[in-house]
Length: 483
Image (tube, rainbow, N blue to C red):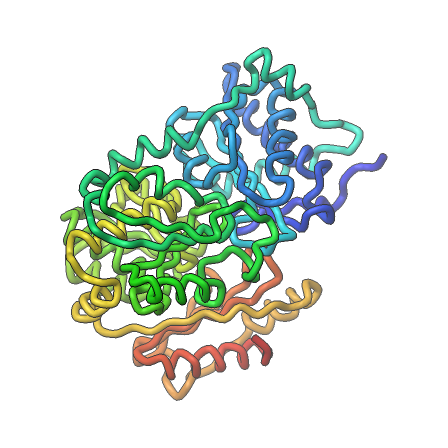
């Protein structure tokens, strides 16, 4: 067998993802796991290292997790493995709780059903740094097919204790009670609809919040790797029609949704209206500032709202901007002891928890905001706009043939218009993609997905009509017409 010249394993914005049986195969998972093991061993300084392993509800995720565990055990790395499907923040929390060398999560997050993937976590539960990912990718490049990954027998390793099957869910649930007064939440006469989108977020909120007056109804809670009725388990407007219908029909106060591995949050208000992620992040910031009376830096990605900057100025707290991906958010959070970090995709992380996205804790914080203020979600939006003014936002994802990536990338990079949608461009930057900030404070961003052949076009402005126009202009700049 020959050496790997062009491995199919390439890490994107958050982990390696691939199509099951095409490039996400057991052979490639073993190869990736061996590269992770090589890194762990090189960094262990002679001590027996420990890896925490979790998996979501996708097709074969449990078997892929067992394969990773076999490789770790084969390299004499102690494995702490979840006894059932778990959410990514649960895996991250368990990794940090044990101060393990790494956490490994089998998940493709919000990707379509035929995908799976691997996320790698640092000892503190955050996404592995770009430097660590580069080391692991280099190791993959250096491993040949003849050098088979070390593979231990799973059952024998469990018998000897090298692989330990553990309830990570209980460890996480106990930790959440230290972050918010769950007892007071349980007493609130609130009806909540929770949509786990057939993913691994099911069961957590009932476990943490049931036992009082709060009525929590779960939908799409049974694991189903086909994700029926939705394109993919991403809590965005187009995938939440069922939730949008049920909330007003049942008189619920709010609808909450998490993505496939529950590190992202989507919200439907009491009228069945979708709250976009920029609104949600701004509201969570306002919750921490006003209700929890927290102070500290705020970290946002380039795709986040200008409302964040306005809140920072209003409450005299610094705001730091980074490229897309929580692997960029977390280090800045830690450096500045930030009270919160978030991104446009719906992922938000908090100080005194883990420097990583947590859709479950974000859900609980939002419920606490409703209870503490006595306001509805739509009234919270009114409160927000009374402080920062109305802001409207949208994002359009355009699928393109993978072989066209370089051509499209070059076209976007070379784009240099003087104005967009009738407004002069006052700033143009390429921190992550190509962003144009206009004279009227609107902005347009064109960037490529780090995990899929998608061109994403983002826009924020003072009216919905302006947002539509900006996105059309973005497609014209990229030379694309479809959506």
